[in-house]
Length: 283
Image (cartoon, rainbow, N blue to C red; front, side, top):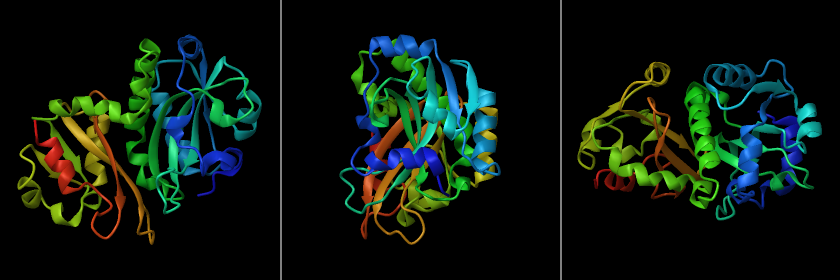
């Protein structure tokens, strides 16, 4: 899927800059964001599946600021105005990923009068998929991702001096709370050696259900209590190497409970691994 003008603007720095290296918001930025109108940047393709899904998710769940939907051309003009914040798709490379893999991220940025887009204060960045992967890979979770983005932005606004919020690993402090919650995961998001409930049970004592996307959609929409879903992003198709990002997000509270990454190779599959289960089961 081509990301057109927005991605063309980002292309000059994505190969060198990690999304988490953009400026962390200051206290003044936090005040500006809370008073801003959040603009959701839509793709230029009027038949874009992403456009329909992001509109539905934002209309249903975004409450922290007023919202408007804008084109990529409008974003080019408005991006320097701090009275606006932006939910925008970007492509990102990781500096420590020598495979050259790229990933689609959903970013929440504050407008600022700066020379480069990588200087815009960043309130949240969450990976969606391997770059160019079908939107179906993440669209069924987009509502929950928007809820998490809003939760994270609210934390940053309340705690702008807490720089640890720059990194999603901040949420690993919630790992001890996972016990007793039910984990919903697709078989495709598990390493082969833990691809069944029976195999998982050898390393992880808490409830796990291997489900299809429809069950995850239902849990997200109904905000099932004490349920976590696996949001996994990794190399797609014929690509055999690259970074695999693994997240656990609550369907009831939209809080992230776990974040980790590993390099996919001959020994480490593109999915949740045994070491992940062991880490989660320690508490």
